[in-house]
Length: 174
Image: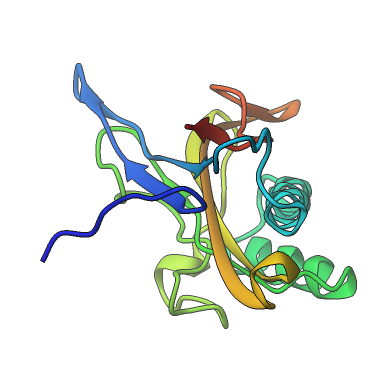
């Protein structure tokens, strides 16, 4: 059975590219506008703002020398303190995609990742900052939406740099 994309739909794309032996991993979200609509419902925009805030909190937790589990715990504690219901599951990218280096949570391992989460993060490395938030959308009768984001970041001696910008607004279709 084929699903039809309709006005009012939230679309999510998770894609990785490989070139010259290097890999990327990104996620984007789009909203299909109803006729006459110019923006997604406020509840969706609030969810995206919460996901962006979780990105900021996770970036603040990316401190060279911390283990992946320590980064995870710091980001989740900061999110909980702000009332953000989310999961962090970031990982290194490069030659191996989801390969060599510390795991910073997994979608189903928010209490730490034994082994892979015990390795430290190092400067001059690249990660996929991957996470998701859950938020009710009042315009949809309070339906809970899970909104995932994923961006390439570089951890340097000066901090974290977003390599391709970050999604702060929905892609609009219509």
